[in-house]
Image (cartoon, rainbow, N blue to C red; front, side, top):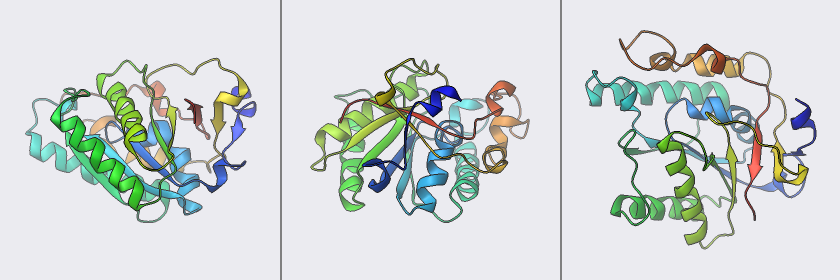
Length: 226
């Protein structure tokens, strides 16, 4: 928490005026890494949309892909209702889980253009995305996509990174942002919506480690340059 206290508050200028797009590599990353950001910006009417990069079907390879993708969409919808407290536009980009497109691929280019257009229509000022150095390939791909959107957009976009699987960084105070604290219980209820990731509902497959279920009341976001 001391790291968070040294960070710039999201309610400080110019951050308190910005509209946000959150990019999550998979359904559940929005809660784990950006739940407090979603909670705060949704209630301040500054959350433009959330984009899910993959269909999430790699978590249980033995399950039929279409069925599991539908399950994970429903879970994401419920988690977002619990975090945001109101309907928020959700975009499912449906990349194949654990097989991300790379810069230069046709899919990467189409997705970049789609999100750049969304940023222009929704007047997005800042993108929150998983960190470029996260160990999961989809998390790193989401970051590369966010930077490509920033570089191709006609709007002046900021990109900040949030941590899911990586470690918090030691940086200068000006390189960190912190959200306001969330009320107790909301983030846990949002994560509980992702039953496929936290319990046996879909049979053998990925199970979120218990250590990751102890989520802080705030998010720390890392600035990557304006």
